[in-house]
Image (cartoon, rainbow over all chains, first blue to last red; front, side, top):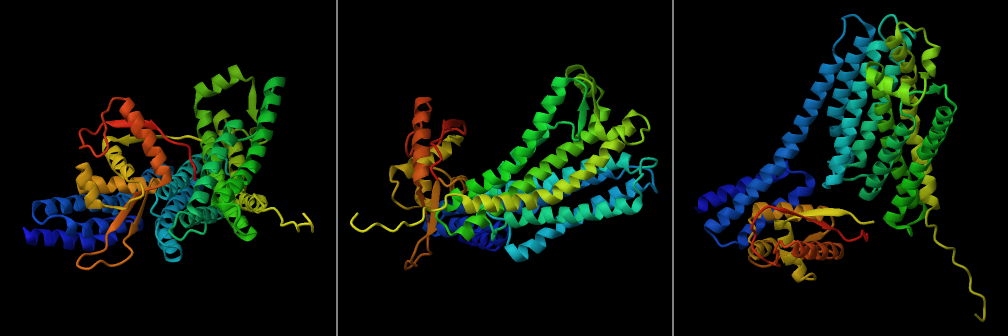
Length: 375
Length: 118
């Protein structure tokens, strides 16, 4: 039995590097603790439990996440690939999927060298997984819009503008993936609570902004109440967009310790604002582009909207040549969908700036007042 | 701001044992003997509790003679508050979870956790 114990101990020792960084100490502790367990069946059972723990964690780390990523990329590619050969929209979509897949697969290796592997906490893994999922969903819905918008005869912008936009989009997505990976890495520039607070605030704000302007593009109502309600909602959405990074920066700075130097406060605030701006832009862009892609095909939703909130039309659809109701809507709204590229570009930068300002201003320590003589 | 937590009977057994001597650092085998849990069950529970900040872990400071250094565990102040509430509610729910008792089934117990104090 001793030889079996030795074999399992050796296997456990050499399988520890396969575990996530945060779990290795636990596996090592379990293995070393075996020395305290009475020799024989008890020690063997203890080590068997260690093998179970190690295999489960290693399988999730080495096989689970890569398998899930491969499945998600396959589904995205399979959905985006369809279309007539030679169509410029299909070519752009295929380049989109291939490039994004390569970026998302390769970037972790580069970030790992600079910032280390993913942090051991469950929150870091959840944020990294959610960030990757959001990027893939955005690519998926974007290809759905472009399949109509960039196909003949709707591709009025021309291929040069189309490819310029595409290149910009891919560069922005590299930045988003890099932010997600760096913030959830072991040597993240932000403390873990800052990343969690910023991401949660941004995701909530993004969802709220989408719900306040639920059609994904500007619409025009004929009724007085629907029109004013819509304008009020859009104004509120703008306030939420500006307020989320400020609130996140302030909360993250307080959580990290309000008595830290102004420079550190500003840095934690900036990181929280960056996470908030990134998450909000991803949520808004993905949901709004999905709406633009799906809404004209959902007759029940259009009928419900017309019956309950008055007659409405997408503003951009009115100035775009209409070739059938559905194509006209998508072609017109896709011009606005392209506008989300500006949102994706500016939101993290604005969030970073607002968060830094909020972090610097939060909990500023009271200046030391000189005491008056005699008091 | 409160938050809801659900603990399995096994997790409650670990928390109960750690709460019995909150200031004392415990080691894995001692916890396993006290709770009757196998190592493959105990360590994932400790990892989850540590991830949530309810348990703190450290290695022994000095290398003892004749044996390797041990990984030690202790309940945090927040963990103590959460565990006290959860154990009280489990007892009220009639689950007969007692400190250091042996583990019976895998039924989960939902408890209202203490306010976040971090």
